[in-house]
Amino acid sequence: MAGMLVVTGLAACMPTNDLMPLRGEDPEALALSAQRADWTRKTGATRAFEQFWTALRDAQYDECRTWLGPDTQAVLAARSRQTGVPVGALLERGVEGLSLPGADDPLNMLKVATVTEVLEDQPFDPTRTRTTLVVRCEGRPDPILVPAVATAEGWRVELVRAMTAPSESGGQVLEAR
Image (cartoon, rainbow, N blue to C red; front, side, top):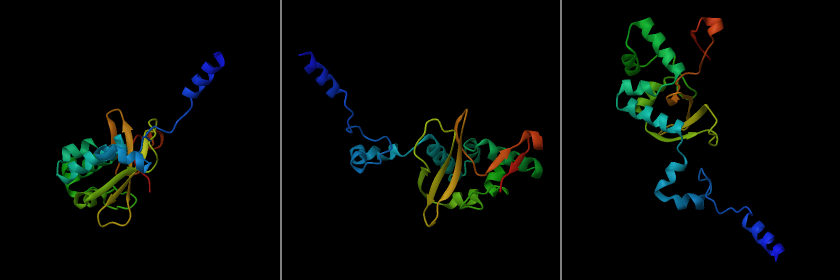
């Protein structure tokens, strides 16, 4: 009798594949999600990009600026000091020094682009503080690779690959090429 209880208990603890994958890789599990299937692909970083792109497209430059990461903010502040032009006006006109793989002038390109898909380049990892977004736009065969960084305020989009080296540059932003 005791042996039967042990066997029953062990059988109840056996692993099963009845759970739906978190990211929806399984087409059958994704079909179960129906209209919520898009939720399985969105992350904080992809939502931050969508908020940034919506504000940029709608010419809401102050809102757009809030979705930019610290490295991009530093480049914008430096350009604003150099030119005497407010950051919002720089975002409207375009900013020299912002460049991404697949887009030499990401601001002006994204203003007119129709973004069709935004995904992280790797599976979701809740411990990650940096990621790369793969942004596909209508009429462009190659995606744009957009860095994103987690800050105290949430995920932010970077439009420049930059690094801060306080010991070498006195806290200035050095653009990485």
